[in-house]
Length: 285
Image 1 (tube, one colour):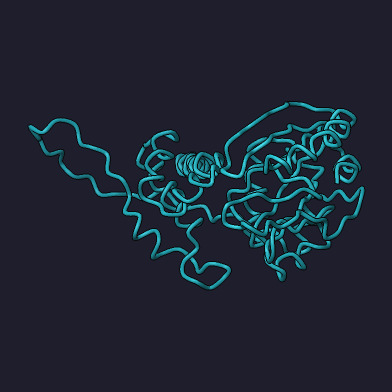
Image 2 (image 1 turned 60 degrees about the horizontal axis):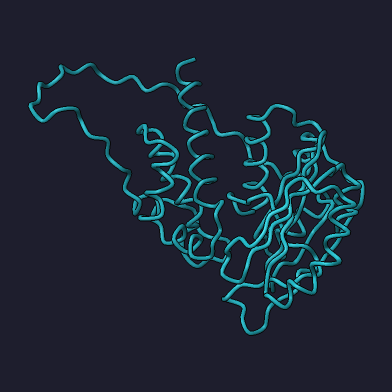
């Protein structure tokens, strides 16, 4: 697995240990490929004994990695021609990794990654880190039979361009630019109640308006979270305020926090806030 990442440009990895509760038990940043390989041989026995997850986050100088997470079998087949590595993390759950060579601008890379995840039917809030193939996926919901992370397929050296991915039909269309809304001028009301208070969006409305989940069992709660965060950002709530409030209103966010998925809430709030800022900028233009 590490060699396949290296074949498309990975130069170093962050190494993290999480226990079965999702709590961080160790962290080694910027491990070279040789350092990581030497470490893993020694870490495997202890990880099994302590029921720790071994997680790596790849980094490259010239390549942008896009993680497509929570893919079912049909979605995995769709991205098969683009991914350099595909993994099975648990029964029915898959992950694909795509290396893109022509994403240099940070905002453009974020936007393209979001569109690729949407077009591929992947989780919109993938963290960019993954369990090492050959290790056990320790989560409470799997006990007592914990699945082993396995490589489904690999194509060493496969690097894609944005135009190639678009030609494969995997990239969602850009969100249409919304014209600036012209509101009629109204006389300001003088109030003795002080400045107008910001209001939080109605989460239930976002849930009702979300598309169906891939499983077909109700709405896509990740998209509902994203829509709600975007509306909150449009009402000038900060990323930290949105992330904190999301845990209160969203059952999915609370579940992710219970599973010690530290990235989901903050990444969702940040991505939604970035999208709201881009729309606001286009409206001014």
